[in-house]
Amino acid sequence: MLSYITYDCSAEKIPLSKEIEFINSYIELQKLRYDASNISMKVSGNMNSKKIAPMILHTFIDNSFKHGAEQDMGNPRIKIVITIYNNLLFFSAINSKRKDDEYKEKVTGIGLKNAVKRLELIYPDRHDLVINNSENRFSVFLKIEL
Image 1 (cartoon, one colour):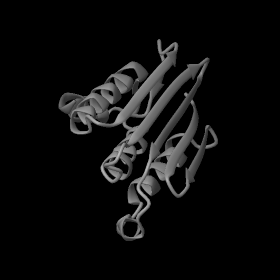
Image 2 (cartoon, rainbow, N blue to C red):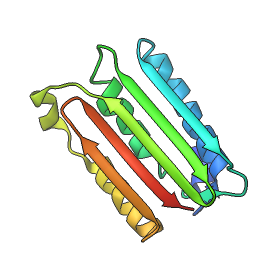
Image 3 (cartoon, one colour):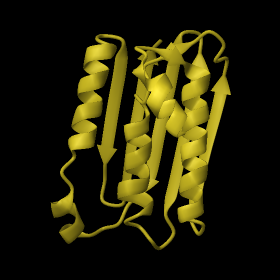
Image 4 (cartoon, rainbow, N blue to C red):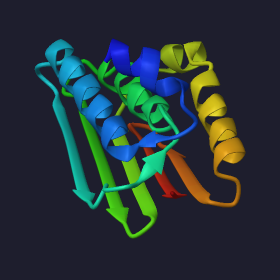
């Protein structure tokens, strides 16, 4: 994971397969921390010759753990789905979250703001992003034209 971040992420675009491999490793590492949780990831479609901006999906996944599993210590749920169809990538990350007004006041949201800005800069007019924040669930739906 460190090698990926240090060397691969300096490129403008990287093979999608490397990004997915990094995401898998990150999730496996997080599963060690949250062994009582329900964490799943499903990837489907053809990744061959597809490239993506490095770490473009990571903020959304990291937030699922940071604001989901870490805060919802009861029975946290995280579901990540990545589908590649033709030249499109469909991504969703859905996590349970704790209902706690004190915690909500501590959340700054800078990571999401930065992720949105990166998408606008790297994939202008080539992405759709929908973020839903309800009382006990947070979800991100993203479509990127690769």
